[in-house]
Length: 281
View 1 (spheres, helix red, strand yellow):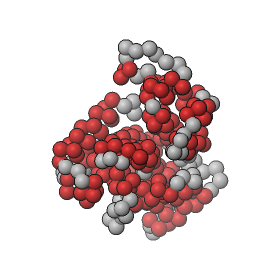
View 2 (cartoon, one colour):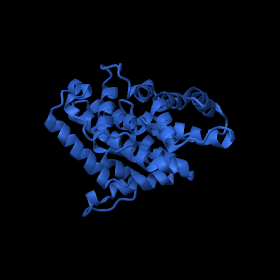
View 3 (cartoon, one colour):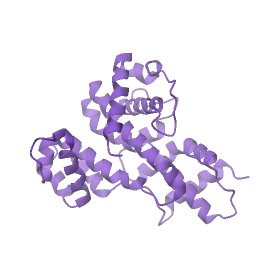
View 4 (cartoon, helix red, strand yellow):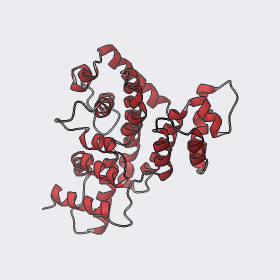
């Protein structure tokens, strides 16, 4: 019988196999994040890292010259972009550009999921950051954005591993869309945590990956609570693989922990919907 335990083993093997098509965390993005997270970040160092990658330069300048800034002078230097949109937003641009690459796939099976997964990741990143700022946790806003962006990367890992299983083990039963959905849903928190550990990312991000669906989670972990609630908002709005349009957000434990009212939660829903509608996803 082809059980989830055997698939679990194969995913773990896929994670460790040399040459596996794993989602990656771009080294430049990591260095940019590390510098920006310092108490007194060196903006010149961040700029020097970004200008080494013309794709990142283009992404940052695109935001700095977006329609929001129409009517004022166009800029062509990253230094000027930092001044115009701020270091935090520049870091977010870098993270978005580098993570988007992971969701580009030529495999038809993976392509069924990538657009939805990426839209959910972007929406959750924005929602978690919005919550951090609205709830008085400005210091957590940069981490909230990144944690929201990568909290579901385990789903991508499981999907790629399932493709690998199908290619290497021709004798295994064909994995249907329904079965794949179940594997992804059941395994992505643990697999995402393992992947982030492999990326050598800080423990708080790993914990968000691992615990964003757990019932017995650490309610004192504010970063985790922010991402969990942003995730629930996306679920209510139908942004992602999991959807629950009837979800009543104000009754969720996370909303209570953050002291949020119906009005604030409604504002959050509108903000997330607007962001997704305007973003180039």
